[in-house]
Length: 367
Image (spheres, rainbow, N blue to C red):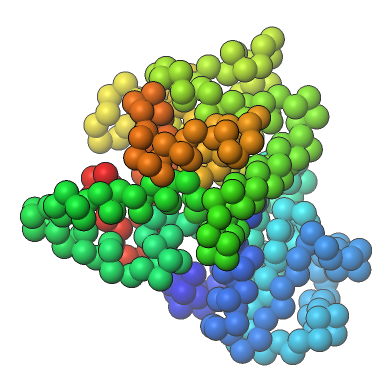
């Protein structure tokens, strides 16, 4: 975000996309407070009709800025203020307006969104070329350790594995326990905050269930038939089969290929799940041999994955919590680690794509 601000100088807007409850709004507000003299955050989930109507006609930008300053009781300063469009997918006209607002040049603009690429959210607008996109994912393991006030473990692991000395059995067991705790809690900010406040995995599980309920409600809004939600909820059972591909026909039957493809695209674009496609030639340029008909699906957050594994059972019946905490994980539960590896690899790719200039330890350094 800071690179965008320093390099763009108002010539582009920043779009931060990610799943619901990932922490987009929180981090944008903190960034705006720290990096700008003032900011206005328009939450389109709660904004009134007057705010929405501002973007019907952009012939008078002076009026738009005056109205926003009066409505939010905030003074905007030229080239020293930022306007945030929070959950901009709720107001496609505001996203369309980015082209003209950036051209005006008075202020910076940041957009946050979930489900931003879903067809109904872009069908009637021209996507502004003035957007720079970055993706936000659940907290990775390093960020999780930071939340627990631990800023030394990862540096130590980097050093030990770089020098090929290893950690020793006792230290390795401790770090494996730490990793398993991350797997149980996950990287959703609300779940991590609940753990820090209560030290209770049962309370954390309840928080994760609320997030999953929210996702399921979103899916049911996007697909009234409920098939999209079924695909999402079936991810753990599909992975537990140890098959080499996801089999949507075993989850939802009798769906036409075009409809099925739309559902899978919608699930992938929701950012709640990570897709891994088969490549016939796993060398440089793997996309050239990508097979879209063969894929596996993982949850974007392993903590949510564990809760979803035992969705129909009470927390006290969730043997995965028990086995992970006591280091009794059986081989038939190895698909949990598979989901974790997929999540980690995506973080690595997103980090490179977003030019995140910090080193992340190699996964083999953890397990």
